[in-house]
Image (cartoon, rainbow, N blue to C red; front, side):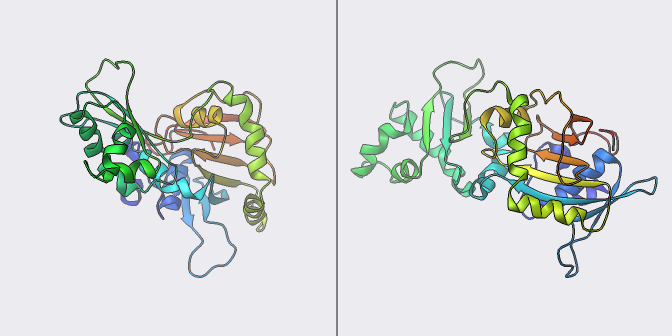
Length: 287
């Protein structure tokens, strides 16, 4: 079922175009061992995205949404693929750290490699050092276009001990990485108080199901850096039992990186991290 529905689930790279619901359905099926029936179809109004059907006959409801600025969704989805964030380029002599703005068009990533090679041909360690020459028409205007768009590129100051690589990061995602497990419950509670999330909770409860699941795609700047670092890259989780609002049974947080998997908050029980992208269906966790 999973292979025919979401073929890239086993690659560790998640896409979130209009397929966000299908990917979430596949993740939930794999973790819980339940079947997800798409329900928001055929003109139905104000209904949940999916119905859960467990092997023992129990039923539940599932709603899919996201948190964080919409403008960064496209670049975040692309950079969730590690081959787009860390890779080699033929001819590069140094490792480069490239930073792009959160609203950077993914299609423009393909032009960055040529800019880095141009920097090395002119023996400069950063892209902005070519800006003046580009303004004077001495080199390609692609340099000014990139710098004006908020792209920065610099030679890494220390050796990684690996062949030269390009590292692509999103601007403004950084800070202290400690303590995310303590901050997560409070920051999440604030998100759940928003009108959008309150409408999701109301929708989940309208038909009287006791098993209610809210699956949230987490964009990079939805939380503080410490929380995001934990969610995306597998850091520690809160030790206290989750206290979820609105009758929620479970809340799912998916950052888009395979290292972080998917975090579940199970009401009154625990926080647990699942790694559904390369496990067999129904073996990752408890319902």
